Amino acid sequence: MLADRPPEGLGRPETLRLRDAAAAAVPAVGGGGGAARRGVGGAGAAAEPRSPTGSLAQGWRYRLRVQESVTVQEGLCVCVPCSFYYPQSYWNKSVPAHGYWFREGARIHQDPPVATNNPGREVLTDTQGRFHLLGDPRTSSCSLDIRDAQRRDTGTYFFRVERGPHVRHSYTQSVFSLRVTALTQTPDIRVQGSLESGRPRNITCAAPWACERGTPHTFSWIGLALTSLHPESPHSSALPLTLGPQDHGTNLTCRVTFPGAGVSAERAVRLDVSSAAQASILSLAWTQTSLPSGL
Image 1 (cartoon, rainbow, N blue to C red):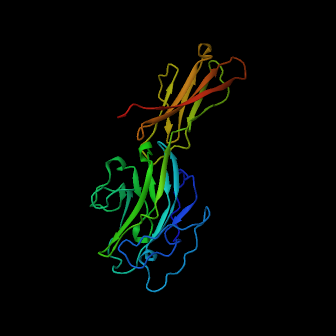
Image 2 (image 1 turned 45 degrees about the vertical axis):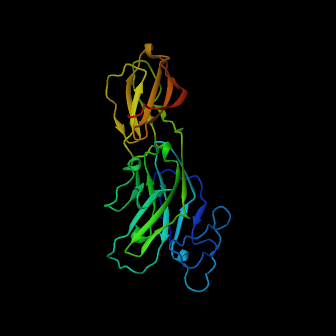
Image 3 (image 1 turned 30 degrees about the horizontal axis):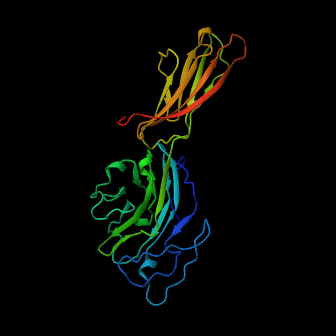
């Protein structure tokens, strides 16, 4: 089955190698867990499966495809496409299918999952509202959406399916590793026309790479005596200004804050205000900062 395609604007996983429990060496026949060993193959492809002899091995009835490695910057979002297969027996369409994502090493009956579609199961406090099981296990989709990524989310995760009394399987041999790195993206600052003394201008700060599905991010301006409100959209903030000779050489900073992860990114510019017909805005530098904990 094909994995769900991530919605537009999502962060892109860094590595395209796939792990497929079906594309592995022949597992032992029978066994309660029956997870297949990992296949051997080149990047982007897995080894072709060999048909088991005799009765159908348990591992061949449970297969899952997920990207092996996923990288995202803190404060941003990423979708992890995932599809799986499980026995189409012992239940009918009216039986609900529950999916769970766990951190590696979790005890499935004692520890909470990081995400699930089971309304009767509590999820891990640290991931509540940020990790979402996008896929519908009834249609063999296990895609995971991660929002407001935090450095402590770095780790390895596995999927589990439960449907009826007999379909209860953890895909511990088909895991994916998540790596959350420092936020290095920076906003862009643009000026509408040249900066001439006495003429109103709009200065825009844009962060098109920011995620709209997470906790709303905010824009702030630093460096001038700002008294008027500035309109905002999900990805930009416009600052209307009428500059004078006293503003020449002033530094103006735009900061984008991601409260869901406690980080921010900023860019500073030096204003070159001229009375001539032409003026310019000179880029200075950018920095990435962390907010105090609890914000």
